[in-house]
Image (cartoon, rainbow, N blue to C red; front, side):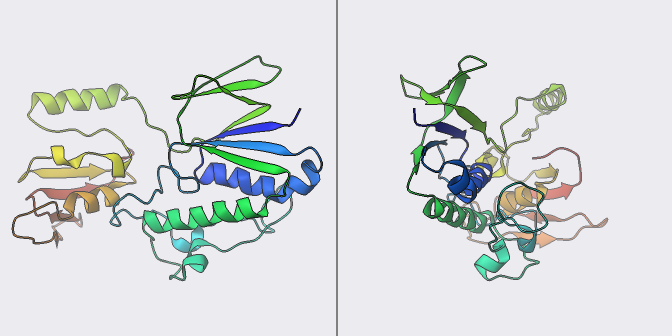
Amino acid sequence: MRPSLVIVGAGPRGTGVLERIAANAPELYAGSGLDVHLVDPHPPGAGRIWRADQSPLLWMNSHAEDVTMFTDDTVDMAGPVRPGPTLHEWAGIDGRTFADRRLQGDYLRWVHERALAELPPGVTVHHHQHRALRVTGPREGRQQVWLDGHEQPLTADLVVLALGHLDAEPDDEQRALTAYARTHGLVHLPPHFTADTDLDVLPAGRPSWSAGSASPSSTSWCCSPRGGADGTTATPISPPGGSRCCTSVRGAECRTTRSSATT
């Protein structure tokens, strides 16, 4: 029976698995072939986090020279080294640049397409643009991966969960903050992926605080032009104490501070 692999998540982690399969396929799958099923409702390579349909105001939090999808001699691994360009080499930008997320998505799509092109003829990749709902099957034996909208599962000899960033249910602290905000006429947005956060719930003319490692993206997104009648853009302000804030066309004031929370 032809071997089958299901990779749940076609973003950077799933693309990295595919690149390693391409590098090792001549030795591991010569003659037997392999079916690879990529399961992700978002575009392969970029996935949800780095997809193209998000604002260019949302940046990465790593320098472009520190981002790569390829191996070199410093990597401790059993497979062959397949060198390739870093993000800044591929994009032709300064290495100390914080690239926007859409550019990173373009890079990841290119890596995905390169990995596909390097697969030998016996390895076939199938992309399923659906959500994986559950995995069933015995501890020893083939597994079944059930997809949203499909009555029959994918059958696999091995399932790789390359899920990356996941949504999280609010914990006790977040629920307490939400309750406090509701009691005092405020708005609390719990940790969430910035591009999918509905900032229209922030009232105009009120201060808005953003905390966590993604706060620069949240601030940029909050302070971007949001349909003001006069067409003006956000105005940066440097208040005492070194905090950075800005006033958007909606009149909301955005400030950032450091915290362990991610928003």
